Image 1 (cartoon, rainbow, N blue to C red):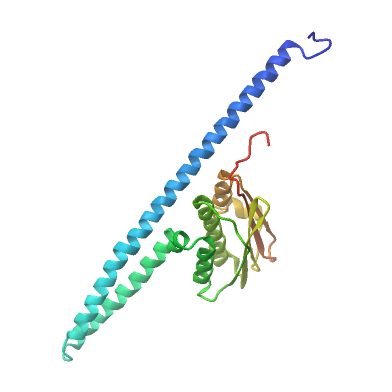
Image 2 (cartoon, rainbow, N blue to C red):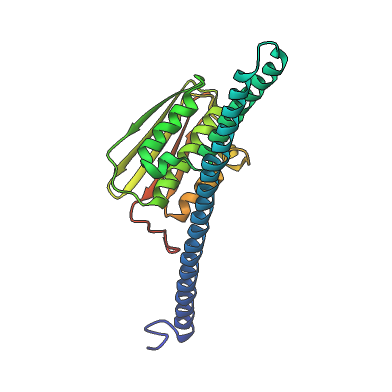
Length: 251
């Protein structure tokens, strides 16, 4: 077709070249997402292994040491009160270290997430973080479909990061975590009644973890939203497709 009635050959060639480059870019993006998701899985598997080693190895050894020290303290005659006091302090130190080890194990990878699923893990997380009484954490979890391990882990990590941020920075008294399904999407909302912030400044700060949330969601085709104003609390939303599709470059 001539240039008078259609596209000149040079423009057609440029359009074809553009489509070819765009296709290559989309393929590269999909390859990047696949690789990044593999790294995410490897990191979680390493967390799972370390958590298991802490719980089953170090934790059990500390329990045995604590028990043996307690037996030794009880077996001492009453005239060895000073030595008994030292042993009892060692028992107390073992107990504190054991509890810290268990907390670290839960932070690395809560066993309840693998054993009982996402809802039980979120309930345990809210109970653990709310035990100090600083923030009352309410859960609202709707009926959920069967979720694969990647999705369960991702939702749990986003919730863990968001609730931890509330305890560290928000000065809130109440928080709500809502997880529901809407069509083919999971909607996770975390709200608090704290001091609020400037969303742009918060997302560029290296201490909030918000950038990491956004990046992890993008790997699985998800979206991240944050709504806040100083003095008016904060609301974070994570939207995740259940089909696991990632957005294309043309979108």
